[in-house]
Length: 380
Ligand code: ADP
Image 1 (tube, protein in one colour):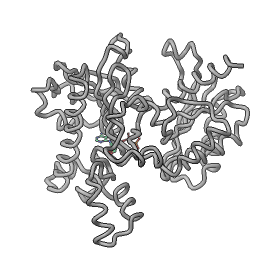
Image 2 (image 1 turned 120 degrees about the vertical axis):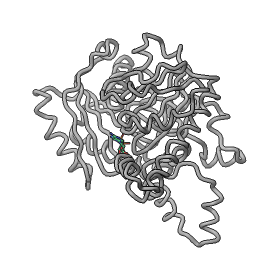
Image 3 (image 1 turned 45 degrees about the vertical axis):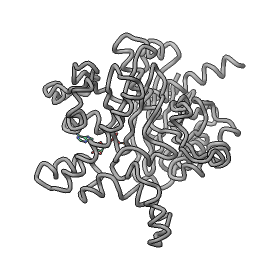
């Protein structure tokens, strides 16, 4: 069956078309027929028109059976789900918690529904994988009424990616995910680390929103909440402007004064720009701290995995993060680390193996969509 995957970002729409089935998923033989990206999206119906114009010839007259939609915030949805009126309303309601993300996914869903009304539309959430976090990991240490009434807790994000690399790594090791403890580092524009204990996320660095945790391209990561309240109460700063600052004008961009793009920051650092060097050090140090925390949370690990733009492509950042972790059983091999390859590969044969595993978020969304379709047909 043909499955369309839609991933609506803050200003872009990524799309992919797969030929797959429950059997293809089981045998890892799904086929990517085509993919693309619409940048600087003004309206979602326009962006989808472009995507369909690109993909329609690849369908060869066949229909699209399912559409998998990446939805950033699914709060407590424990897994992917067929979108009906109730699910649509729930995603809409969650826009309160994810104003930068969920409205885009909903707009993509509504526009896609107009193109393929007969397809089964499935929501695949970035939060769902982290619904296995134990209470002591997801709760902020504040009075319970904030959690119950106001839904203030850690949700975690990048779950589709962390799940994808954990499953891929287990497959490469010919092991079941239940046999492995993995620390997964998704380092892209957004960055997060996840402790995957025997197939389940037990902790992750992003929290109530994707702002918490690591130093990112333009996001600050962890910060003392009282510093922000100080800026609001004592300095008269505007809360909405502060939120924009923390999400869009912080991270390596703010520290380096160069760019939110790690390539630019690395090359500035290499040519002696002191602030760029400081940004690289801050980025690596924060990631290292979280890796240490998750090794403690799982009493060790079998593998440390790097994925996403920076994780897959930047040998110096991987080396910087792993430097000085040999006493914890982590060491990167400089030759393996520097090898140019797009494949999953081991870059350190230390006690805790170090790997690069390309993230397969779109494939994961296509597979979940197939799974939901099979389950919903089974129910009929
Ligand atoms: P997104 O989170 O938007 O999907 P990506 O996973 O594509 O982002 O990651 C984007 C980041 O990856 C950018 O900071 C970019 O500079 C970085 N990146 C891509 N290639 C390299 C590279 N060769 N070296 C260092 N950083 C890289």
